[in-house]
Length: 373
Image 1 (cartoon, one colour):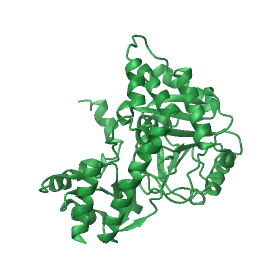
Image 2 (cartoon, helix red, strand yellow):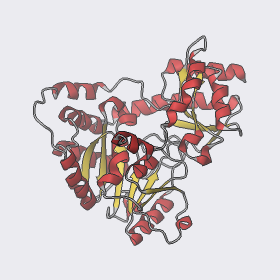
Image 3 (cartoon, helix red, strand yellow):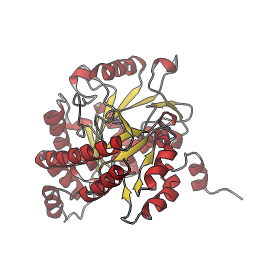
Image 4 (cartoon, one colour):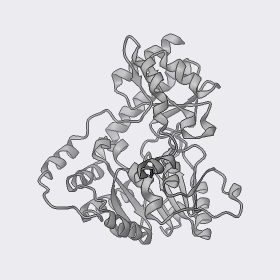
């Protein structure tokens, strides 16, 4: 009997980590005041009205969209990168809208011709989809923050993630510049996941790998991934884009056209409205800042130390114990967090605590943590 193809493919992939949280979620739900789910960074605040209105006006969309995207959508991305992040010299030929950044991250090695035997490098503590994307094409995945540890090996693809998910760490410009130079010297494609670039709270503002202080004024060999899920509460719209070297973007476009990967037209119009409007982004940033401050203080009062966390939508917290012990302790108080080992072995003593819940749920978590203290 021939084994089904879908089973063989699934066996190449790691287990879906959140399945391991089921029992802890049940414990948290049993709390008299209900669960406070801080295990994922799902936006809960309303999608901005300016975006909803743009979507309504574009609802009559009978024709097929094109893979490359609307000129207005690509130009809005170029303008936003220039206005908000100082990216210079990028044209619309260096941008493609994509159906959510996770889809892009998961499929990028395939679309770039990475295959069996190739090396894909990603951060030591990282979003699990980098590993999944390498496994899906049969490539060798390696989690490391040290380029020297690679020795003579040359990755075909190297991921950066700043600000980091899960730690919230922001990489300094000097480090980013060195990685760009290292990759260019070896012909490695560098992709920077910058989906949390506007979610910063302390220290220096995160800098895009496309910024001239990092790139040297050239986008050769580099790509940046951006998402509107966090900035604009558009997780349900699946609006994101990839930007950078037009030659690599052109290669992606050629493959994606054959696969029929197209962002729906109404979402592209909504994306323009979101990128063009900075007011709603500042308002959302203020909401998250207030929630973060309250939750951080409460976690510290309950005996947790907060490491990094200067950016992103999470607090990287530890009590110096196994992460599952911390997950269990929080679940007993009706709070669900993500164990740090989901993101790599280096996270085994931490939990990732999101502050994307409603004000009411954040206040409930704070009250429970404060009562414990």
